[in-house]
Length: 434
Image 1 (tube, helix red, strand yellow):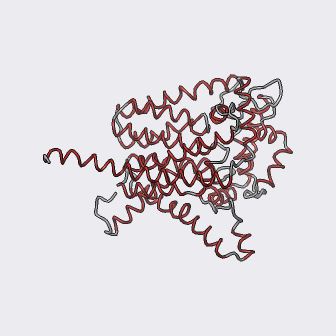
Image 2 (cartoon, helix red, strand yellow):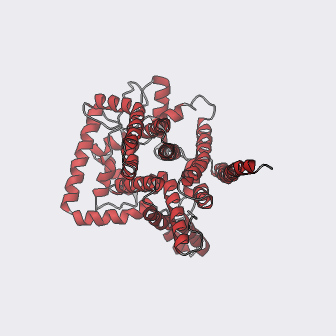
Image 3 (tube, rainbow, N blue to C red):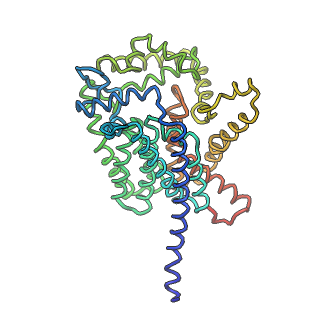
């Protein structure tokens, strides 16, 4: 063989081998998700009915409304992305099954995206470890066949992050535009993504301050606004004030400020919220838009008063609430640790503890170390800043692990980076292992 041909074929073999790693993990993740769907079927949550009402009105009446009968009043309590996703399947004989199968395919494809994003930072072995964590993550598997927006949002957000990191490496404005569109799409599924173009590009600009970096950031933000901007204008016109995609986010922070409520038991405090008119409007959306906006302002003011009355206790409660946000005890399909301890079911206790350690606790600490060790690299910085932003945003209010689920792909990448950094410092691997 010609020596030149041998040199040229080496990268091709490397890419083929890495592609085989990624494909194997994607297929393994797809198999697990399909098996879980086969065993447990479609999982419905309290919010599922509202999403289907919105989707039905969007398809039949062309309006995003929570009303089940005329007149179909437009709402500012929800964003349109997930209802539009559902609406695309409503003409099928079994729409719920079609929606879940689509989510499973997206979540399996996300495993490959995690590998690709991790490869921007890590060598193939550690990139495969990050992708494997997501492929086998019990909560990711569960939410792939749950009729909630988690799977769709996680897919869009991680894909956007990968494309924007690639835009920096390639110095390509087209990638920046594509990443912006993906972030815009993500913001129509979860309103919090509206500010993420600025969060994502903050570390990129700091790491490489230049006109070209600012140009990529401007292009990404502009293309993101192509999708989110019209909805912001629509909601603001309906509300008579600026509304960043949806109104009602004060509800979660208000719940977090109620130190007299058990934050781990939503079935106890939701009836209290419904008994209050402002809480009812924000929980159900079954109020005129003007009243929803006023309720949002009212609960924001009450939240500020509650925090001012006991700032130190509130801060301690938020630190304590981090465990509900960042760590899952994997109670779905099983009893809680307390219930298992009462029954002295040692095997199940150990299996739940192992799952919590592998998928929540160890990645959290390794991820913190990985973020610090690789802080000067774009992929790590972007993942770390998004994780920190999401944790700070959600910990201020009522928290559930599903709010954190969209961050797990980035956390697993940082955890793999942390493991690589530890291996490097202990000289178990060569200096270029990561």
